[in-house]
Length: 427
Image (cartoon, rainbow, N blue to C red; front, side):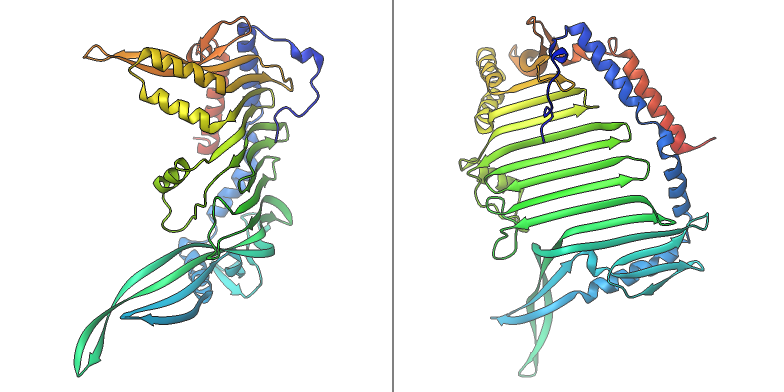
């Protein structure tokens, strides 16, 4: 999960001046643009266009109708009871890809269906090559509740020969069956075109089956690959009141292009049940009213594994308290700057290059006068600045100016135009 997990060569410990850093970052951007040419997707584009021409839209209605019917079959009535004048009917709906089973085979502009344990779409592309889209699951399943829905029903009943209106609720409980592993693959003549693998491990759900932020734990990952070498991955871990991490990366045959990682050690997170009554406002109130915190917070954004923005916060709650004081004193220059200076002491953020662990420039928050309103009051705001080894300070806007990054801007504009022509095709 660390951006800097390699031995640091001695020659990479040199601290560059501001001009050299601009040149270095611009060259990294130019190199990155050259590692993602549209020609990488030429074969995939042709295949996707082939798929869009397979049969009319009406033929897919048959597939949808069959899948809806299969979904309806998995709705299981588990019992009912009458309380007073209200009848409550309980249903459990297992929403999982495995319920949509069967093989759909395309022929003669329609789809034929046969029962099977997995879900497959079998067809031929415009080159008469056999293609199969397949969905399978592996391992045990966890039944996680995602909500309850009540429908008010109006009925009538007969009493002493009179028709008396009667109202009751139909209540449906919804669950998601989360398998340990789901595989989605698309093959062409037996060779992979694209594949998606998702892994899940959810533990310690509530007695009702809900996810509880303060007590439940989860581990998950996604890996999406294309046959041209591009890969998108995600890894996440949430151990209740212990560890929290999330990592994303995009890579191709040239190596890792972009990655982003965050992690921390949560503590004192209260029991917050993700039920149908859950709201962001309630979540914020629960967290603020307790001692919930994240310590040793870590963040790393890596571009081409050459330019990295790394941040560390020892105590996130303390930082947020200071941030709140900053926001409440935006008309008081002295207090605003004092709280901002205190905030910088809690935030360790900077630029690093390559595998070096030498900070090339610190990133700090700086106060600036945003405006003087019509009443003559000063309104203060915050901007990020780069602080170099010689103590010179440059705002992000000044450092990443169009003038100093002309070649990088031109490289990405050319890449954008290249993809526009690629998608649009020859005119």
